[in-house]
Length: 406
Image (cartoon, rainbow, N blue to C red; front, side, top):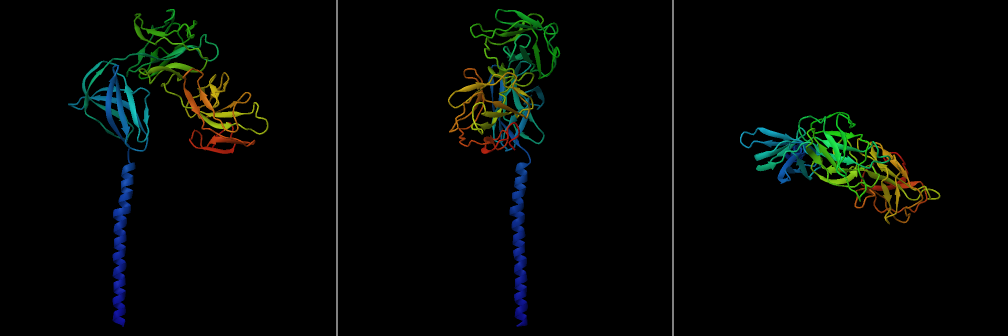
């Protein structure tokens, strides 16, 4: 019996050792390899150039982010396909360009000099991002110099002395604009000369940078029955760039601008004075349609600014779902990463269901944000609000008027 007992014990020990070995092997080859694969997948983002196009002498590069993390592109390189040397470095319009996870993005680059020949196109991104390039392409690019990038012909309040234009330098070198002249198109008057009677922080525009010029005593015509435009001439009187004819009848903080910088179509959007043109994002962050007591003059919405700069929303309009609106007052500024509460005169929001829309007064003008359709039958201090500032989820809870929703 004792020998049998010892044999059973030995078999049990062998079984435990074998089972342990199997478990350890599975852990090593399965669980550990899974961790390894996850780590490898999260090490870096991969950007792939999927193709290019040429439009009006500008280079359009289509880049796909194959990863989940966002990536930043701040350079486009033209590379000799034979020796691999960089021939020309370009800065994308609106640089740095942010490409979200799994997003396909069009990047536009303009050249400071004529380009004709076969090149490999590459892009520059932050450290640790792998870039997959395509084949070589035959490129024909125009030379672009100083561009009129933005015009404010009808600023909020008084126009005299407050109209301005923004110039953009797409080249890699600073350019001194002393002696350059700003003209209008209708009736064709010289407004001022840079370095003489224009107002600007400098006469030198930095590489891939901006210079805001204003200070003339006359006016740009802003009525649509007498359209106007702006012309930039060099010191020799030659036209460097000009805008199309346009009109700006609305006294908002929206300017006439190219989006993206230097090459985009002209349109009206909230001013980006002194920095890259874009559609500025704002959020209707909180919505009070049924405050305690009488709703008259007590409804309000809160607007959140996620940007690093203040945004002037003077004379924009807040609409309801039935196209009723109230105009936002003059000198209404939303601070960077801050909040602005618009106290609605009278009442326009319907408690049984409505929405708020922040948009331009212009026909077919930009819509800066809108809420979903919301119902507020509770005559209390609860509001509809984004669960986090600027987030997509809406919740109904105690008001956080003028402060973070959490």
